[in-house]
Image 1: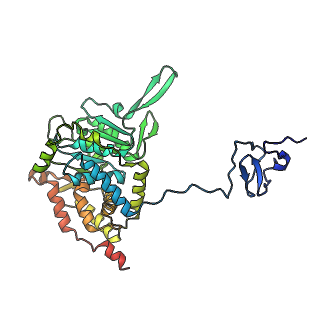
Image 2: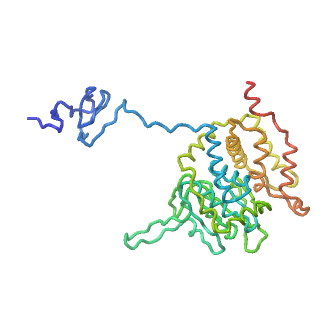
Image 3: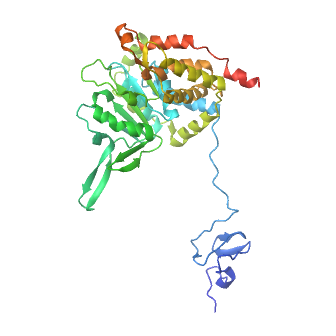
Length: 388
């Protein structure tokens, strides 16, 4: 006598057969489980009420709808407006920070104390619904205080890795240039590879991942100059500056708010952020614009007053940020003006002046302005594209 499943059909009719046996189109395997005629069932398959077998007719997961350029512009503006309630009257540094976030890079905010560097970084972090950690860099900070360490677990009788604060999607490295070079070296791998290696074992950090670093001017007491390799890992640098007279009055009218960044609530989540990153791929960059970026990059390497110019990493950062810059203006194409506007933030920290330039008090901004005036500006890439 053949045993019967819950639905009353004999198991002999359900084909517990060889690996090559095909089940009929409407064969019922268990309650609520239907196997198509192309499904192969092996001898080892346990067909029970809780088993759902896949088939070639099973529908796949529907991908999320793509974000349009217009929607990108609206979400970009929402983030900037939210952060604008924290740092009043500073739209350009805010736009640079948001652009870096979407580009998947890191940004360095350099300015005098009290200009709102930490408030800007925390405001951006709070505007995104994701994990956030803050690291206060000091001269006695050790690499293990940043990336974590392997310790002995007495209860488990073994070693285990305890991750440091670097394991967060957005990390605020406050006053980063107050830590020693040894501690700075701990950031080189994670800023480039998005991984941390401890005792020969590599650990991945959460995605998305971004380091927002603030630093005081290097001439101030107790600061260290960041190594060139680390500076090159920052997609952009920006300053903030002191508020204007009118903005300063507006800030003073809200004396009861001790921490403006704490009032910021998330306006987008990780899924929306990833959609924004996908949307920027639809922004068109003409070959003439690419050539313009390369010519600017090469010009920083061959100037008589520049000892070392921008690397290929800088050119890639420029191209990625230019697409986001264009999309934030509701454009699906990059213009030469986008490159010019981004050049000070993308290239300045990648340029090392010669000894003669330092002696003659020539600054990097003046040299970059000279390069932008010298390198020929191409015809608008959008105009070339539409004429094809």
